[in-house]
Length: 560
Figure 1 (cartoon, rainbow, N blue to C red):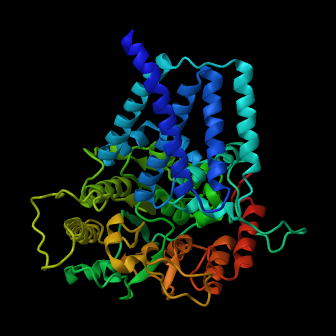
Figure 2: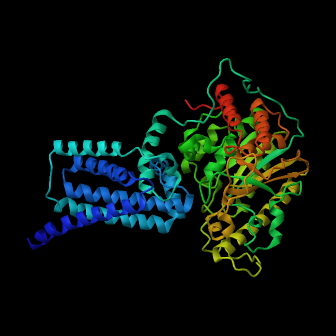
């Protein structure tokens, strides 16, 4: 009896303290414009009112609603830590709809997953206690009135200026989450929306998708290599490293070519999408980071489709399980005939050495040429050895000498893995030349994004000098590299822009293999010259939007 009496006093005090602390947080942190704290409080009130409708318990609903809002804030900050983007409402479905994605998040971010799990357990305990202790109940009608009042308050306070710009910021995580609920609903209802110019009638210079083409028996095979978290350390003078690593980033023309990417610290699938589709994820607005999942079956002229049209056999060697962020179904929908995920390759973990994946590519080529000696092949191989975490020594049996330096231990481990990746790549090239002496190969390798450890490098936060052909400046942390290499073959000249944005690489790959170029590839290359390598941030914005319109009109991409 005494325990119940104590609970009757403690629980209201706990609820009041939680609510007061939450309001103070909103005033101090979710405050980009005058009404933002009120708007976000009202949106949280909607959440509380929904719980109230279900439970009829006032204090329980307030405490649980505030606790869930706190979970959103914590998860959003964690997400920004690793992906440089806050939590959006659609992320909940995007990440939790696949068991393979959940497994990766648990194995790759174990500490944070455990922290979140403990928080949810604590939340469950408090909720169970609160359910029994709360004796302040309301009727269904009263709960409905509370919900309508919260909706009205949220609507009245929702006229904040420039609301859209906050959805990419870390500083207002709860507001961002609530603002993107509408985006999530729109994505589910309408699908992705692509920035494009208005339709014109009659169609101006419509694209034509070329029919089947035949390439010569002497045409090169194409190997596309995705290097996880790869960037040339020479980009940042404050990093001390073994200069023997530099040739790894040099193309056949003796130059280092910089690649402009659209994500930092994570989100490899964004670079994969832009590369394979030839369209910037930025052009899909706030749906951009879900483009790979949303555009499944909607792209008709991707990199693999272009090569398959000309008789190439296409294959992907993927480091994760096929359902990770929906990658397997997406790859198959855009023309990769053979798809080998981690299980199909016999991977023991998600962090195999690059030599493991290269070895599987060699076996695939041997088997292909054994049955079809004249078959041309496009292989896309993803690697993962340079993926974080860097707080342990991968392949500790390998000695990698490093110069004395002031780098962090994590940076040194990253550089160590990068050197091992170079050795594995050099061995792969030698093996290709040895095993297939009569075959020609074009090898295109690129870094998908910089690792989070470059945050310790002062230069990574600077803005690169603005280009006369770009809208605004580009953060140095959104630059990696691409390499075009070859065996028994000399590719065409590469573009010599300071930075090439990743969507253009799709047409560079086709041109490097002397693939007959379709209208859209030719138009993309023309756009590249017009914009001096920039895509989404090209000053000639109308030209980019017109290019998208022509893709839509030709039904090479479908967003309906």
